[in-house]
Length: 318
Ligand code: ZN
Image (cartoon, rainbow, N blue to C red; front, top):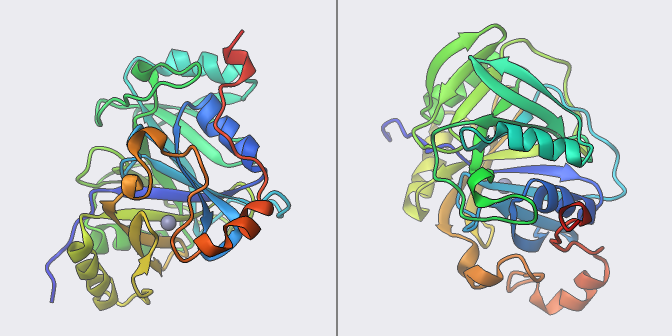
C-alpha cells in the first residue's frame, strides 16, 4: 500500500486544433509562447505534435496540439477540460486586453472565486482564459510583441467539465492529492502543491457530453517527479481502482493514462528528461524532431506535413 501521493499540478494539456500554421501563429505569434518542440504524434506519425511553453518548456507551462486540418469540429462538454487557464504577471491584464484586440480576438471578463479572468477562444474554437497570479516564476521568453515582463508564465490551471462532478472531485483529492479550497456558485476549487498549473476548478453541474474534435482538449497530464515516482503513481492509480495503461515512452517524458469516472482522460507524465533531450536549448522548436524509431521514415513523414513555423506576425513589425 502506497501512502497518499500528491502531484505538483498540471504537466501539460493536449488539444486538437485545425491548420498547424494557424495554430503556431496564435500560440507563438499572438500569445508569445515559445514553440519548444516540433514533432509528430507518435501514435499517428502523419500528424504533428506541437509543443509550446516557457523558455525551457518547463512542466506546468506546456500546451501541446495535434493539428488535424481536415477534421470535424468537436464540442466542449462533460468528460473534457472545458477551459485552459494561463497565468500572467500581476498588472499585465491591460496589455493582454489590448493585444487580443489588436489581433481581433474577442474577449470578455468573467469572475470566479473573486479573480478576474479574460476569456477568449483560439482560431479553432478552443476555450482559453488569462488570469493574473503572483505565483510562478516570470517567463524569460519574449517573442514578437510580447515582452518577457508581460509573458504568460505557464498554466494557471483548468476548468474541468465532468460527467460525474462528485467522482471528479474524489479523483482530484483522493488520487492526485489536491486540496479542496472552496466552492463558488457552480464551481469547486482545488489546489495542487506546485506554483503553476495548480488551481483546478470543477464545474458542479453536469453538461451534455462533449465530443472530441477540432477545438477541444484531448487530455490533461499531471506531474510525476521522476521515473521512480512515476512507477509508484502507476501502482497507486491501479490500487485506487482505475484501469491504467502501461508506461509509455513519449521521448520528452514517460506517460501513463487513465480515464477518471467523470469521463476526462488523465495522464501522469514525468518531469524528466524534458525538451533538451534531442536538441540544444537555443535550437528548441526550430526543426522537425523525430524519435529514433521514426527517424528511418523521416522523408515520408515530412512529405505529408503542412508548414508550421514560428514567426513574428506582421502586426508586430509595423
Ligand atoms: Zn499527453
